[in-house]
Length: 119
Image (cartoon, rainbow, N blue to C red):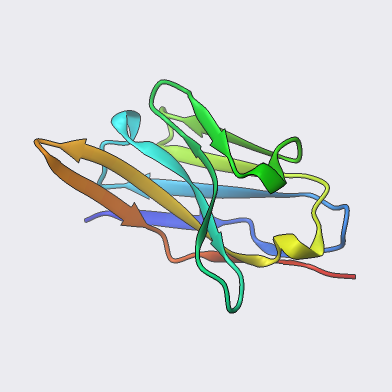
């Protein structure tokens, strides 16, 4: 059974920090691209950051220099360190795992964790 479980969301003031954690099971984590997406009310889900098995990282432009993604293959976990948070970062943050196996795309999502940036 595949499970992606996010934690670490919450309410934070502008300028503050949060660290999101996604723990996974039931997937071949070490060869999956993993990452974070977010969806604000009334908006489409968008990429925040991803990290490939080889460590190549992609960030959405608005989070560059403020957010950091990391993975720990020994724990089957991916992290998102969010600094200098802004109200526009408010969204539900989702963990994602993705890989292709024998021509079949295996793509999984977590249930999401709410991040609210407000004074």
